[in-house]
Length: 426
Image 1: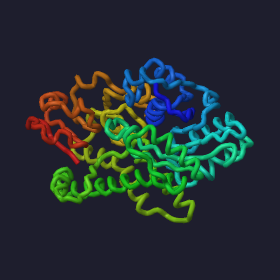
Image 2 (image 1 turned 135 degrees about the horizontal axis):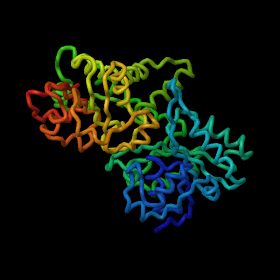
Image 3 (image 1 turned 135 degrees about the vertical axis):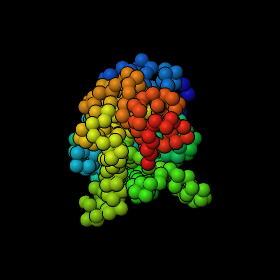
Image 4 (image 1 turned 120 degrees about the vertical axis):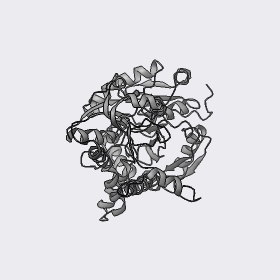
């Protein structure tokens, strides 16, 4: 493989949806090692299989990326990039345990005077990199920031399942604690992407930019979800309203639905946490979160009103978005739990989700043979391609006479079903 002449050695800590594509891209230009504590994950990658479906088998097999489960493999790296998750806890407060665990681990391998650059890509609120992670590295390693090691930040922009906005095409926002570090990181990231780099004014600015990107989307989707509820009271579909409004040149094309995943449903809580620490109550941010977090229960209640009690319900899709196997923070589970609370029998089908992960994350079983049953209600919760392509007769066959087809994604709006099928959509 063609390595850059500067000879920088890179270590990427965390090989999930963000870390693996980045590590593979970096390995095309630099000696790179990908480190993950999940031994099963590393074994799969070595065998050429990516369970996230972000990197195909041939690309993975052709990569020169090295793998390790021990952080010590990054001891000789010139740049260490941290790409671990930053979720929220049960109280919707930032859960920094994964990023701090990675920070403490890498603190043990840094060497005096080497000048290793530690870059965080994990989504955090402004100040975490410099005010929390940096001091923790100094405390544990006994080394001095600015001399023995340096800090940088480059927010991840991976969109699971998106084959257009990949890490090697997007603009990469980059920040360093001084101009020299920034120059070095721009060289590294600039080698990876054709989209170029943007030099953020500071690390805190880069952290802030990332956290508002998803908070902005969350607020816009919350508005659409709220008008969905309003228009539902007067018997009109929001899809019809959006089709009409979308003819205006500057109308923002957001759509309603369940807002989950590891970014949009999480990042606003990082921003609101910072705001409240500073004595500011973030009314717009939390209002948006409240609407979106309540959408699943509202959908379940709408279905319940139309079918009465004791129905057998098939939910098509459990992942947080279409055509990806990612179950993290999927809000489909809110619909499921509300329906179960309303005493309906719920069967869940998803051809992409891992059954063991669904059991571990949500305590639910995926029914592989669910498409051969007969139900009072079929809910199109996730618009996987296989579901969206279902013809009218296939959908009707899943429903009992006078059964309800609940199309949450608007994916069957143009499918003409028999009169024996009742329809409901947002």
